[in-house]
Image (cartoon, rainbow, N blue to C red; front, side, top):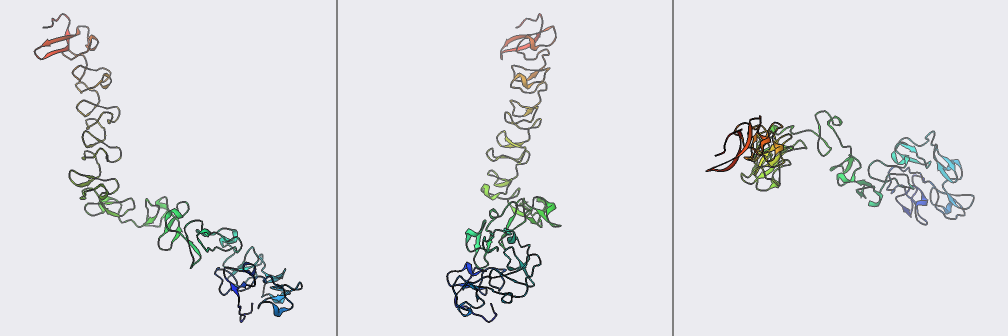
Length: 371
């Protein structure tokens, strides 16, 4: 269309008159799509009896229909008149500087490598099936997120709108690459638990102030060990509010604990509220001791040595047994016993003795008379 031409009826969101309604033509001055040349691609479907009957920039073709061109001179430099349309050469890219010849053989702003020329777009915007450009008019034109009708681009509102490990940049509202490890971040940055590269404020709790902790995002936050609290929500992840001291604790070994909240990893809240690792001699509840230890009647982890409290024969070592007094014995003289088999040596047997304290069984020498 000549530079001084004006239109009385026009439509936007187009780069061809066929995309407009009846008697309308594509006005590139108000076209909402980026990357469209100011060269109309065809004539509105209307009859004509001469060039004067066609809109500016159109000519009356041999079939008395308005077309974009009849001869080569009707098109701009580098464009070819074909089928009534001015087309560019994809192979030699005959478009003006800064434009590229797309698969529709029309000139577009940008490079031929633009994603939409291949049918896909970067980001969340879908490729328009007719106009071959990345553009949205409404949310339905977006893979996810919402359509910004001022920029005609789809924007993310949260990380959930972005594919894979990409994250939503809250300022630009664009999906940006996330990280899965520090190696994917710039020098001096760390990959946080949110898969975002960030300059760390801290690397350990010791880098933070009193009663603060270093979070998984490498920032100092309140709610560290010793921080005052009244509710669990006031303590950070991995900490709990000890409602006896009203301080945040991390559930370390021998810390007081709440059985419902537990302790740090590999520790158990046992014996009325103590964090234990189940090692030999540690406080325990039945079943909380680390193998091969067992929880004795004294609520401590034991290995079944002689004299250890026991609950069952299996608690004591292979050379020991659990006597009626709840202790591990080896069947020596005077040891409590359950049967003659518990007493070691051929000259000892299990004898029930009754005295002022009651009846009990002990390993006695053969030939000994019970009182």
